[in-house]
Length: 243
Image (cartoon, rainbow, N blue to C red; front, side, top):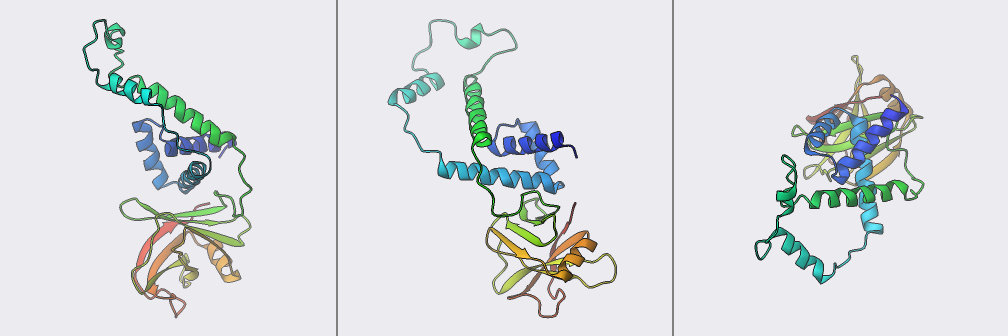
């Protein structure tokens, strides 16, 4: 994948999170991200960046009173205007509509907000990059994204992000497994977190299993995980591990 294409996909993910994509483009991107772990990871990254910007830098400002009056006048004028409206003056086929003035303003504000995020100095991350060497996106049947699992390029560490504050049923834990292609037993990759994000070192057995597998699975286990070294409860989710 070229650098230009990666940058384009990353910009699309940022525009999607910011809400500046038009409806058809949003729907198309939502379809693509369900089968594209890298695109889904970029969306998660931008969600975190915009949330951080909002918490750190955006201070609520009370607009002047005359702004409210002007908005009310634009939306619902008290008296019919004696002169031609902007809609009447517009060329045929290009009627702006009641809220036509609002969209260029909103687009300009959104563009400025996105530019502020792109240009603001980013802190050096303490965790591995958001787009590691291998990724698996665990989703429910409804399409809701639950966990994002990444293996760093060196293969030494694994990062697990809980995308939807998923918790196991009472007295249960969700356990992650690397499924072998042949008849070898699955290898446990540990319990899935209820926290937003965790990072863990991989054992030699886990590294070998991840190098040989293309599929991850999640089983529902007793509290503390399986005691047999293999899944004992039902497998509730599976996902492809992509390069």
